[in-house]
Every structure is written in C-alpha cells, then in structure tokens.
Length: 230
Ligand code: CA
Image (cartoon, rainbow, N blue to C red; front, side, top):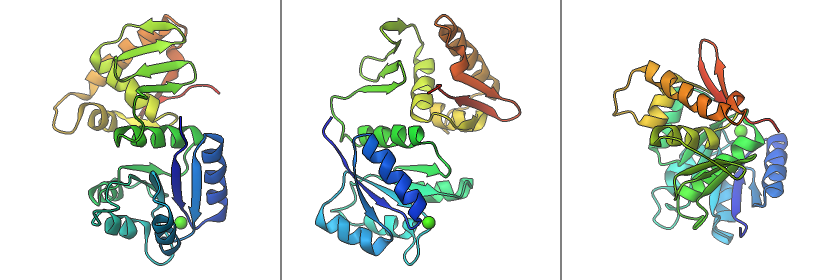
C-alpha cells in the first residue's frame, strides 16, 4: 500500500507523540500540528489524505475548524476523524453533523485508531482495490462478502457479515445493543434489541467451530465488545 499523509492536529504533547508513533508504525506518514492555525498551514503546503483532529484545541476549536473546512470546496473531500475526550451522544451527533467522517473517543487503542483510519480511507475511496479488512488472522473481504480465519472460509449470513464488519473496524470498545442497532442496522429500521442477541449467538456459534467464540465478549449490563488477543 502506498503511504497516506495524515495530518494530526492535537495540542497535547503526549497524545501527539503517541499518535505519531502509531501512525508511523502502521505505515502512514503523519504531519503534526498543535492548533488549527498550524494545521491550516500544513494543509496548504501539502493536502493530506485524512485529518485526525482533536476536538478541544486552544484558539479555534477542532470542531469549528472542521466546520470551516467542510464549507470549502477544495478541502471538503478530505476525510476528518474527530478525536475527543467527551463521550456524550450529543457531541457525537454535532461532530457528525458538521461533516466529520468519524469520531473516536479517548482513550482509544492503537489498533482501534488504525482500523478506523483504514475504514474511513476505504469509504472515501482513497484505498482502492483494497477491499480486505484484516485483524489478526481474520480477513473480511468487502467485495466478495467473505469472512475467513486464516485460509478457512466461514459461512455467515449478510447480517452477521455486517456485524463482523462493524466489529472488525471498531475493535476493543464496548457497544450497547442500541448502539449496535444504530450502527449495523441503521436508525430507520425497527428491530428489537434481543434480535441482536440472536445474531451474536449465531456469530459465536460459527466462530466456535474455529475455537474463536471469545472474540465476541458480553459485557454484563451494557452490551458487547469485539476483541482479538495480541
Ligand atoms: Ca486537546
């Protein structure tokens, strides 16, 4: 894969350093900015393939800068992932309303960050011909709608495939049944929450044949987490 320029806008040194390291290790080319002004300069020098943007910045906030970029025809198509310490649902909605392509809540794992960046690059058409999402030995082929573990292909229904697609691009975080419904089935579809449990059970049963039922974890009283051991 050719390397992608990622513009990282973050005012906290420690987080910036961590992002830099993770991105470089994953084969990306990060460019760093500490605030929106620096980011604007970096953007004009060399337009990035994606912007990782902290919500809370000194001066112009991340969300305000994102709003401005999304109004400019020359910048509009650069995908933006907002980083935030806030986990509030209304902030998320606000972030997505101004045109951010995705939203990651701190703290996040390096694995999650890289999975989300790849998913956004793929959705925005920047990664072409790369229809495979891999996580450990799991391979999800989004063109052929195939899921495999190593070289063994698994038999999954379209719903279980979508569920796996969501899980593999959002590893290590807990999602409630409502969140999974919104993300996997969409808000306009009415489905009872226990339907999710049915699909999760089926998915686990399939994974169980490969001794991998532990990938989908139940978090009592909250929901589910997808996690692969390192
Ligand atoms: Ca900050």
